[in-house]
View 1 (cartoon, rainbow, N blue to C red):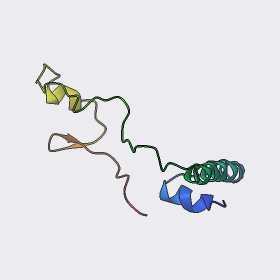
View 2: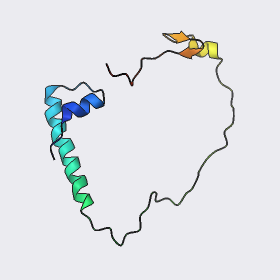
View 3: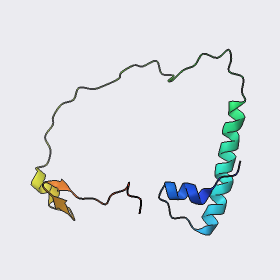
View 4: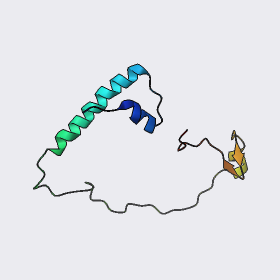
Length: 94
């Protein structure tokens, strides 16, 4: 299966070199071909499962524990605003 690696890289916000594009095209094509092959397996008599451990709702109690004061944590922040870290957006489409 042919993969449009430049398009996938753009969606994932990845900057790829030309030699990486060719290599990834082969690798992604191989993965997708394998998935296609798996979809051909007869699973008619196999019971569907969403997990295999048998565990359900494994949680822990949510407790407050001592931590650093906000001022100390933010003291090393490059940029901050109203008591929060300011970071570059990752979902922007520039």
